[in-house]
Length: 140
Image 1: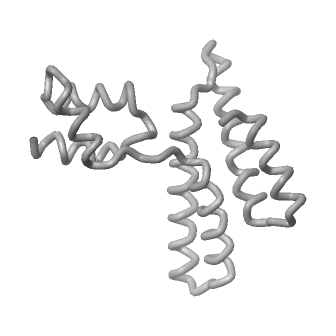
Image 2: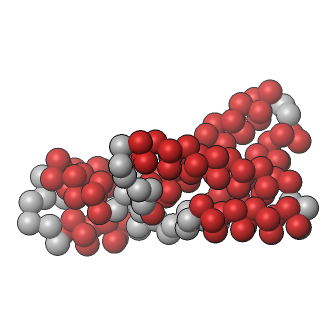
């Protein structure tokens, strides 16, 4: 998705009076704008993989924040954060399954761990859990 599509989604959330969804999209939009500024300063453009990575980071940050509120016993904040997490998860791409990762690794000529990790980082950034890729590659 692009920055413009996230802005349109935010407008829809605002029209639906979905405060948590609007907050989540505000977070994403801000992060995309900051990333765009960073990338342009070095002459690059924001890619789909960059946005997927950004979405995963935002999801992780919200999960950590939610865990903190759970420990503090703030149920209202926990519910709000879970709604924001759910909103972000709608935009995350489908992650590769263990079977798909195994098939990709089987198709590689060089099955050494550094080579496998490099291949996945270059071609499947944001689409595969790198810890899972590492575990599968070690077990093959």
